[in-house]
Figure 1: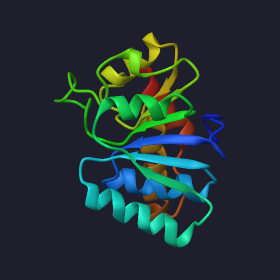
Figure 2: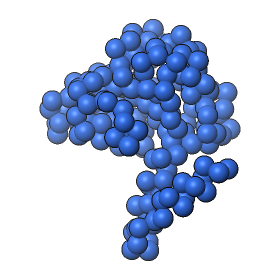
Figure 3: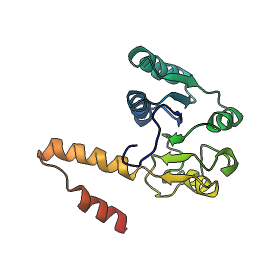
Length: 170
């Protein structure tokens, strides 16, 4: 998030989805000093497990589990600085699916981070742009994951500038 210059520390962040990547994002946001983390997750047992982990190890973060309705989500987004989609909705093969019904759920001061990287612009990102939000997709996260794997396998740093150039030229 620092790379994107999103001022999330001591602020409210809304995270949709805490499976695999979402769990890691939730814990990292808490470690990085988010003030309040609102989690929307269909699997309430999983959401509560993530909440319990954060509460156990990072006591200065308020974690709230949201109900499944969009009204509650919209209410929490009103004073949030960041919305992160960590679900597969919007990815290739699911391009017509979205975690929100339209741009009216968002506000212009919200940064929307969709970790999906294919397609490069999801329906969520299109709605966010219509609402005047800044957006990014999951390509940076994918590059950092690749860089770590590259270092593990080859014991040298991945040429990130080259990789970024190749990815962004397409």
